[in-house]
Length: 442
Ligand SMILES: Cc1cc2nc3c(=O)[nH]c(=O)nc-3n(C[C@H](O)[C@H](O)[C@H](O)COP(=O)(O)OP(=O)(O)OC[C@H]3O[C@@H](n4cnc5c(N)ncnc54)[C@H](O)[C@@H]3O)c2cc1C
Image 1 (cartoon, rainbow, N blue to C red):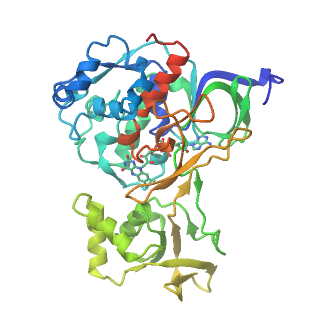
Image 2: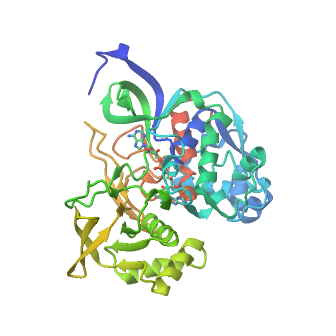
Image 3: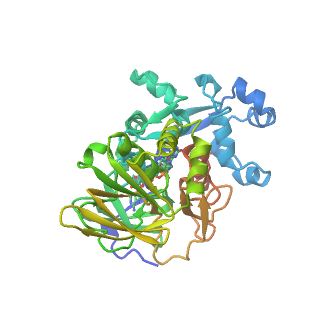
């Protein structure tokens, strides 16, 4: 354990949140003093009369709930807050939300994140649509309907939302809730160690590489999934015409593009590049049946899956899907790039202008040094997201073998890999910290 030897250079906070995405950002607002109260709603009462009965006498904030008791009686806090926020899947009116938020004094916290708030949504393709209605991506204290009303935006919150509108919503949150001063962007935490005060964090400024150290009593690790981008580990992967980020077709001049992947990001890039007139070679490890299953399941609900289904069914020579295939090597040819693909046992060489790798990333747990190892469990979802989640207590999402360390968002074992499924955990984590600190009465 590291001691107090150089305290002058170390800044202390009661809570530090690492990661300012849809998991970390709402936690900043709640720790910043915006506490949920039960106000009930007609819809909530109709659908969940027993919960209404139990909650309506409550005067204090819901952060003071007995989360352990709730979890024991079969109501995980993440689900309770989801039902209070979304008593039905469709949004009709603000009055259906059974929560209201009142301002209380903040606890001393700091949020550190390496890009703007909003997490990976800062970097997804310019025109990417969500998988779910816009209002499923919102925070309970700031319904999307309220945001669009305040900002005069014309948007149906029950429709899928485009990246630009979603990221504008997330970017608005810090100033709208008075938290700008406690949120440090463009800073990357590079190491987390045990300390007599709890945790010692070392962070670097993105760009200047200046380092700074912090201690905190409670740490929320909300770094999301794609911290470390996966690599193909083949020769030529670092050549200049190989990219691991896709934004829009205009960034890829020329005709021929190899897209490597098979998940949703790769589907999106391959479809958009085809529609921009490119010759697309889509290289995937998975068999056709697996890919087609997801496309078929999604094509009647999601327009971009309808589009990729249409393209594949058209058998256009401009869209060649190579299933059960691996990239073997990438090299510079006399007039273009050359990609050698092992396609169902046979070698195939493709001439290309660009290679786009959309092979996802992994959560970075390597920052933790000197702690007991985190207990990891694998999680997959139907859109082929996959990641290692950490074993946590089901009532507060605190890591089972490291007290006062919380896993933000779906890094906690068992939580679903979308915002609507994980947002409720915010209130259990904040409530647990505030209860331990006796910052709220209960
Ligand atoms: C292509 C794609 C489409 C998706 N579509 C949907 C969808 O339609 N609906 C849905 O609900 N979910 C969707 N998801 C899931 C998505 O992960 C969530 O929407 C959400 O972004 C997760 O929030 P998060 O805060 O956990 O992680 P992230 O959004 O990844 O945010 C984490 C933040 O922490 C930062 N960070 C990481 N490491 C450090 C560090 N060491 N120091 C400082 N900062 C750090 C990251 O840079 C990032 O800004 C999609 C994911 C992808 C990849």
